Length: 120
Image (cartoon, rainbow, N blue to C red):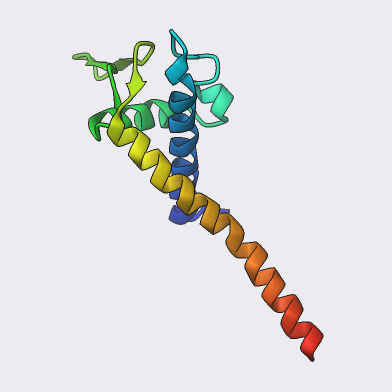
């Protein structure tokens, strides 16, 4: 069974949200908590994790990510010294509100159906 593109993009958006939350939570720490910020902890593939870190860096949402591309086609991504930027905090805050709103939608639909059903 094939997954739809929407499922994959939603999976990435949820991962991005979790990653930015970890960065936000780490603002008070001296070092980035790499035990929480890795593919295994986020339950995503290593490839997806590294690509998301690279995207967040290129978009300016995190900084101090060292991405090295080698002649053999391989890449090495070091994010151990990275941190969230003001743009990243803004994106995280805006999308937190969006995810909360979409999380409420199923509850609102269920409540509406229950109300309509009780009227019948």
